[in-house]
Structure formats: structure tokens, C-alpha cells
Length: 234
Image (cartoon, rainbow, N blue to C red; front, side):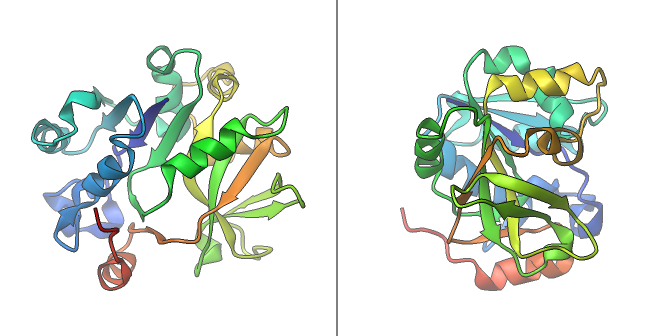
């Protein structure tokens, strides 16, 4: 399996930290956020694609010094394509096999092998396996409603009155048909959460993550991550 790490965001809510540091390289307990992702996936996928945009040269230099550099490809986006648009633009790189997509501005210790196993064991008709977690801020997340088989029956993206706290963790294993649907929208900019996932409700398997997961998109969430996160020992 191949993996896409979405790392091109501007990180505007983290300024002034991100005036000189890309959001994906913001340090958490002394290590760049991206390095946690690379260690989670480096020996569990064949190759990793990282998209860049803001301060792209800084990301490139960092990857060149990574122990995983031999498994990493980089793609520069002159204009941001959105989470779904990046998938569409790189369909040839994924080929005709399922692939992982992760938002690399989240700090997580999820079990990649377990997520892959759940996808391989999914029932017929499921096109997407989604990592899910219990959030302490449901208004800022996509909230899930599941049936007894953990199939997503309701998806509520950042609504005023969320119907729970089980949230989309923005880590997915996608079948090629998901990329095909995103491409069928006919636009270069596509958002995965608002334009693609709703189309697949009823065909999404949710896998609950009991470990750590936090979007570090604000100064306050970054502060909490610095205090709370306990990295796994190698």
C-alpha cells in the first residue's frame, strides 16, 4: 500500500510560529510533527507521497535528511488543491490499489497495521475505512453516527449541534473508486470532507482509535499536545 500525507497547509492559526516553520514541521516535544508520521508509516507502506506548498523548500530539506527519504516522494502544488484535489492530481501515483491518506497536521499514534487489517476485512460494498476518535471539541470536527457494524450512517462536518463526540480522525484507507468520484466532480480544488465523504455515507467503515489524536491547528491545541502526548517507545 502507498500513503499520501497532506502537508501543504499554511498554518495561519499557528502564527507567528508558522511564519518560519511549516505546520507539518512544528515541533512536538522536540520532534517535528512530520517525523511522528514517518515513523508510524515508514516500514508499513511501500512509498509515501508528501504534498508541499507553503515553505516547501523547508519541507524538502527536512525530508532529504530523513531516514525514510528513500521511500518518500514529494509533489509541489503551486496552488492549493484541497484534500480531495491532491488525491485527484496524483491518481497515477496511487495506481489501481487502495491507499492511505493522512492529514499530517494532526498528532496521532494510531495503529496503521490495524487500520489496514480492518480495511482488508471490510464487508462487501465498503469503499473507505476511516479512523475515528472521541474528541473533546465536537464542534470543530466531522462527527460520525455509526450502525452496529461500525458503518458510517451520518456525517456532520463542523455543525452547531453535533450529535455526539465520535469524530473523523482524517486518516483513511481509500479504494480507487473514491479518487474516481473526486475526479468526476471536474474541478482542480476538491475538499474530501465536504464534497467526497458525504457521497460515500453507508459505504464507510469506522475504526475507533483509543490512543492519542489531536489537531494541532491552534496555539492552544499545540500547547495541550505538548503537555499530553506520550510518544510510543521504539
